[in-house]
Image (tube, rainbow, N blue to C red):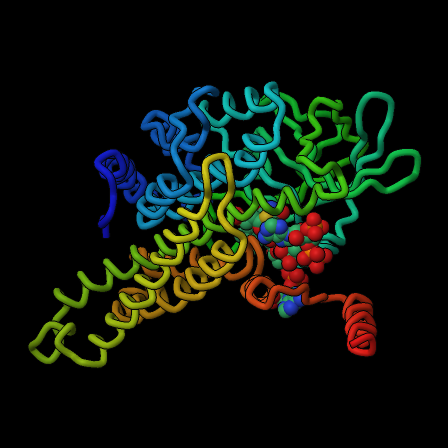
Length: 409
Ligand SMILES: CC(C)(COP(=O)(O)OP(=O)(O)OC[C@H]1O[C@@H](n2cnc3c(N)ncnc32)[C@H](O)[C@@H]1OP(=O)(O)O)[C@@H](O)C(=O)NCCC(=O)NCCSC(=O)CCS(=O)O
Ligand SMILES: Cc1cc2nc3c(=O)[nH]c(=O)nc-3n(C[C@H](O)[C@H](O)[C@H](O)COP(=O)(O)OP(=O)(O)OC[C@H]3O[C@@H](n4cnc5c(N)ncnc54)[C@H](O)[C@@H]3O)c2cc1C
């Protein structure tokens, strides 16, 4: 659905569709070989689809999150690995650096991404997934820099990404300052001493995209590679998560694209496959499945577009809108891709057809980038206008404070 788009956005979509054709042609092979699709990266870069959100002064076209979302959906219909590359080369770490970075940091990030790098964002740890604020990775102030120790896992692009945004708990003179972001670049020849891509984690879907465990062992980061949002370390995590709302919209868009791609394939199949002497599309049981798929997708697209458009100039998508879009699109992607496979019958279950790959690829979005459960809590917090503590002591402290307020009233 291209309604309400400007001529420039239509032209951008056409450009994305041309690249998506090539993406579709290699998607099965990328899934089979589990190799990062470097030839597609070159095509995306050459078509100007990486770094769309980089402002003109840093060499990008200065487009919006919404423009990027249009591209991401189109690519994801064809190849979700390519869609995810487009997410991280337009949102996530890149968005944080373009908002909070120094001129030198923006130069580094823009040059890398426009040359084809997909930055990695390193938040999750074995002991801190949903509870990301419980991360143990630490950055200790030493001389004119920082020394990082700890480990992260499920880092998308670990081993292929050059630019890394590492979230770590900062300490100076033994005192904790808060959580900050530290930028580290792998040169492509030799990894920085202390940054160890420990192993690739085998995953269910999106197999062309490596997910890695990364260890930091006395990794030195110079002061000028500290990403410092306004408000300092005390507000560091919150401000970095504010930027991360962009990536949540990106992930929601990949989920939307996967669902939309599956739906289009299901429609085609339902029209052409005959049983009982009729196209299977004539059976009401299938017609209603297709109807539900279209409803879920239109609802997802409406929320994704709204969230992507909520980003002001130099700002990020709204936190509530991003969470709502991601919950909706992630849940819908699982339902729609599963129903689409059902429409294909046994042919959908075969690895000779794309449906089973698309179903596997769709499963991640209710987990990564904030699970469906955690994001529902975030939505509840925003609509209720109050913090809903998830730790036991946080809950008890809030209950005590509420009791105190009631007594005072
Ligand atoms: C935020 C959580 C980790 C919950 O932890 P807490 O209860 O300890 O934290 P809060 O008090 O809720 O928040 C701390 C701080 O951050 C601000 N915040 C939190 N979320 C947002 C947001 N979305 N937008 C803006 N600001 C945010 C909050 O206001 C507080 O700020 P102040 O301290 O008051 O200044 C948990 O809810 C959570 O989000 N868990 C999910 C973790 C997650 O999403 N990880 C993603 C890892 S990267 C990834 O998966 C990539 C996948 S992909 O390829 O796209
Ligand atoms: C494919 C993929 C790519 C990823 N890429 C990245 C990346 O690039 N960078 C990065 O930093 N991380 C990445 N992640 C990690 C991802 O962000 C985490 O998996 C996610 O935040 C959940 O953490 P967890 O897996 O440890 O689950 P847990 O937090 O252990 O949760 C387990 C279960 O408990 C539920 N749960 C936990 N807390 C609550 C609560 N308070 N209320 C209700 N239910 C709760 C969860 O919803 C889930 O069902 C990726 C993950 C995947 C699968």
